[in-house]
Image (cartoon, rainbow, N blue to C red):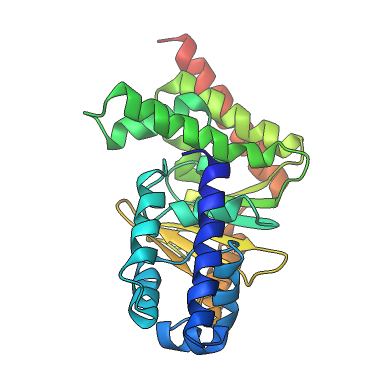
Length: 277
């Protein structure tokens, strides 16, 4: 299902939610209280701006006694999404974010990946996958990345651990191309990238990736991910803690100028290695 069609269904989801809520005589705040989200979030769901998590959709069905229509609609949208169930909402939010801040301890963030690098990462995690599956994953990742090269782009900050730029994902040639891509985004002022050196030792957010997103008309969110799952966080207190962790990572990182030099040096090292193999 194309992004435009999925968005149309989410808007239908919101319109139906408003109709059923009003039919039950509940305000947005009253419904929000019963399903454990704010009334403001119910309003964002109804406008199709934010997408509820599955557990929220189930609670809405229970409160409004809909016979499971919101859960079924949610599942249909996820089944037709190229992303993992825990990531699809994040991909939607990236497209409307005004600022995105990421920390990547081991793998280059999806928004910066080249096709060859994305393919190598996908195959590493899915060694028995069909070619169709791999192509779908790579294509969806490259499609997401277009937000960095469009006419309206988010402010994009990235903190990479040095391990990310030293690990030869896909081989030396693939890695050299990937690091060239990152350097180009920096020089084109599409991204501000800094590197946490190995010598920094222990650092904040050591257990996985961290993504922070800000929006024009929505509260900020945080997203954390490990190898097999991801969690979207929107509780203000938790998001504030995630933002503090990101600030601590920035303190541990090299300057933008030194980071760029390190990235370009690593790219040249990989290039030399590719020529000799």
